[in-house]
Length: 404
Image 1 (cartoon, rainbow, N blue to C red):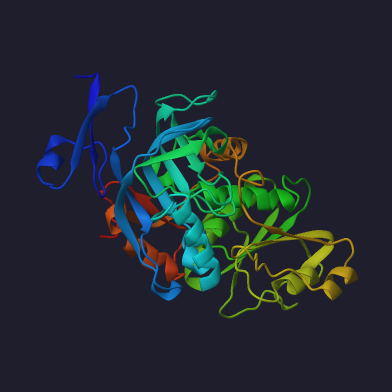
Image 2 (image 1 turned 120 degrees about the vertical axis):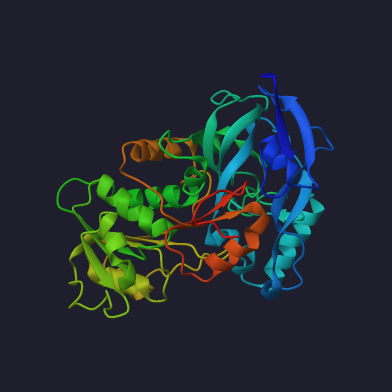
């Protein structure tokens, strides 16, 4: 009947055909109306995250069963099709110390947020709406960075960690936007955090630009870096200089970089590589110690430097020293942590959608992992050799980049 659809909850499954259903076991099947979704109190789904952490060195991401959430005020319930992995998703690295982790875990347990579902990016379809929702409707295809709640509510930490590695996710409509029509769910689910981060960083650096502007991007092959190159060109940068490994030079140039620096053979801070006082903006995604001081030496008067936060609660960004800062009074340095209200919003996603649909922004997927094999993706991103992004799909997909 067109009035119903079959929804199957299980690791790596969504709405599947009977052919796929016959070959699997241990699945929970529910008939639900096609134009709405009502989550019963005992309705279950599969999600991925941390179910036990004996020590930060032994953290393992696993798939577990949990309750389907219900949308609250101004929230929508999204049936997730695509997500991705970001370094900030790896909380045992981000929090940095066992005492901080223990405090976070205690609050999650107190407020019913443990096992801790991980993941911030999502793309999927709205299947239910809470009271007060005005802009989104059931059936809308959306993308979002899902990290808006209070600091200790069982879902997020400091506005950063979400709960998107799950079949169903609630998200405030102010954090979600209509997905680009030119992307599929897997691609769209890999962009929200890195794209919103780089969009905000470039605006802090002065974008959109007019005139002759040179931008130096440190770390060009990761999630934020490969997006930043494209956005910098789209927003008016005349010259983009990018750093990375030589094996990726052609890839980086294909994104729009005008000049590539191989960090294995050249140090960008040497005057023979990048002239002192020659750059208008420096965007640091590598976070190497001493970068702030070195960047100030490259920047022109009135230049700008933006670096990203590396951890929670300590930012850990390599800002310039006090001495360097006072020696260049017209040069500005900022650190950026992308949370709701600073760079994550429906408005930012709508702006990014325009770049994507205009073919000015694309995402490079290094690998795709189904939810059922989530630890394989975690191992890959932990190696820090990912080019672009590692995507997470709720279903197994026939794609040569998939990790099985």
